[in-house]
Structure formats: C-alpha cells, structure tokens
View 1 (cartoon, rainbow, N blue to C red):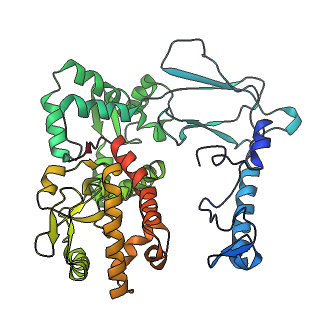
View 2 (view 1 turned 180 degrees about the vertical axis):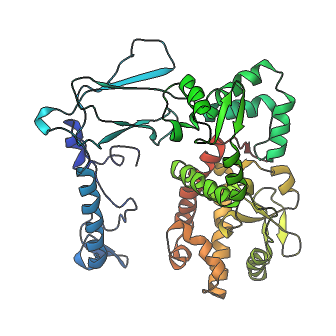
View 3 (view 1 turned 120 degrees about the vertical axis):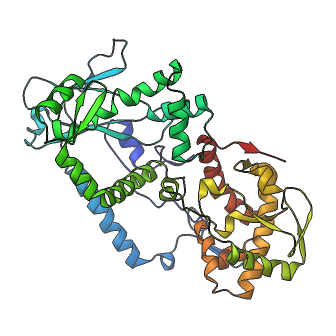
Length: 429
C-alpha cells in the first residue's frame, strides 16, 4: 500500500508515525465488508458481522507466525545513524552527497558489519529502489556517499519518440533505427547517459570505485580480474572472460532474464506477465480452445451484437478480439477475449478501448458466456482463467450484472492505466 492507510480509515501505526517512530501495519488488503464493522445479523440470507465461526484458526496461527517473524527481522535492524543530511543541499547539481554520523552513544555502537542502504524514488514511481549500500560511521568523522540518479526510463521514452519507434518493435529494428540516426545531435545527447555511465558502473562489483576515472584506471591495471578494460570509447573483453562467457552463454542469459523479470515485476505489480514481455513468444498460440468456449455461448444464445460496431455476430462470422491488446498482456485468457466483427482487429490494433464506453457491454457478454459454460461443464479447465478476479467461479456466476461489471473494472482499470503509461494509445470507434 502506497499510503499511510486506507481511504477514510486509520490504523494503530498512524499515531506512532505522527510522533516520528517507524511503524507499519500488517493487514489483509482484500476486505469482506459483510464481516467488518457490521451489526451481527442475517439479512436476505446473507450473514453479517465478525463472528468466531468465520475465523480460520489454523490460518490465523500461521499468519501470526509470519507477522512475528517479520517484526523480529525489522527489529534486528541497526539503529538509525545520527545527523543524516544532504551535504550539498544548496548546490545546483545532478549529484547528491549524503552525510551521516555514527549511531548515538545512547543506543550503543554499531557492529563492524552494519551497512545502510540508500534508496531513492522517482517522482512518478510508487516503489523505492536501492541505489547503494554503505558502511556505518564508526567515529566522529561522518560518512559521505555521492550518487547521481539517471532516469534511464526517461531516456528510453525520449529515444522512442525521437525516432518514432513502435512500442512493440523488434530488437533488430530498434538497433537499426538508432544506428541510422547516430549523426543527429539530439539522439547523441540522449544516448550519452548510457555510454557515459553503463560501461563504467557495470564494473563496480569487481572494482569498488567511486569515480569514472578510478574505474578506467583500475580496469586497466587489474586486467583479467574484471570482465573488460576501458580504453577511451572502447572496451576490451579479457580472453579468459571471453571463453567463460561463450561457454556459459545459455546459463548466463537465463539467469539474467530471470533476475530482470523479478526486478521489473516487483516494481510494476500491475503489469501482467512481465517475463513474457521480456521474451515474447516466437508465434502466437492458436485460439481453438477459446473459440470452442465462445461457440458454446453462441449455440445457447444464437447471436449477439458486437460491442464495438453493433453488428450482429453469429457462430459463423465472429472473430475474437483481445480487449486489452495482446502485445501488452501477452496471453489469451478468456476474461480478456470478446467476440467482435472481423474488421475490428485491424482498426483497433494495439490501442486501448475506452472503459467508459465498452466495459459494461463487455461485462454483460462475458457474464452470460461464463454462466453458459459453467452450466455446461463446471470442471472445464478454461474457467480457471477467471480466478484472476479472486472469486470462485460459482461466486462470479451468482453475481448480478452490476457487481460483475464492477469486479471486471477493478482489474481492467489499473492494467489500462499501466498500458497507457507505457505508450499504448486510447481508441474509440
């Protein structure tokens, strides 16, 4: 949660935070409002109120153990350092110098192995990122650390806009577009953040240097120890490292993608299936199973009007459209597929349909199709696609139209917003 607490609600941690103490509140984010803050009663066959019969004692015990372990881990952290400040706060600079003293004598001296992490958060991001790990100060002399935050995301978007590169362009096309435009001053300026920083700071796990000049000098004097040495605008890969990389390229590639996927997914929780976006499938999967699902719907209902065009659709003339573009979600799950006129896939392309205009018609058709298929075969594995809504299939089937549409909206809205932030364009017919 990226707020102190829920809207119009407050927890026990708030008063501690107000007094300057670090405090967290551990809670289940998905509330059942039939149970919380209700007078115990049964109304319209629905049980209201928080009663002991609604508590899973075994689950609660495990939950308490997890919370206690988390609290113990937090409590074992070192005390905060004294006099932490930005030492160059009055300077006009892209660099920030942090300074901090030793832990106060009142709480004892830190262990020699104690380190502190420096975190930053860009103004348009919700997640704090670790940008450096530094030792604790152990004397009256303060520790200092200088770092510069380069917004790689901003540079990438700027390159995309400068060269009009499609958001789903293959790597070869991106490389060719950049090489063909290296002579443009604005392109060279935007790329400079990569060439002036990435080759140098990639070597820091081996060299532990603080400046670019130190990295260059150390890479040349410790040849063979780190993967490459830097000579002007050229890097020279060491022979033993070249042999190692060639021998283990498959393992290293998989390891890199795994860690990259974990890194990106953690910082983009609303983006589905990040791993598939890093390495897209060579070919799209067949939608034959999904067509069988929708064919059962047409067998039962006969026809339906396309939510985009209003044209009548039958079992013989419909296509399946990914409501949220496949190039964003990279899957063929049923909740994102909708029967549509054949012309829609080309006109809608990779754009985002308006939720205000199309969500309710989409939800109505989706709900009817779910009812038909659940009635026909409640054990159909395809129905598991709908578990993304954190309800059982039976609960989804039993919902009224308004509640079902609201349930879809809670999932679609953040995905649409994230896709929009990534450059996908809005669309309305």
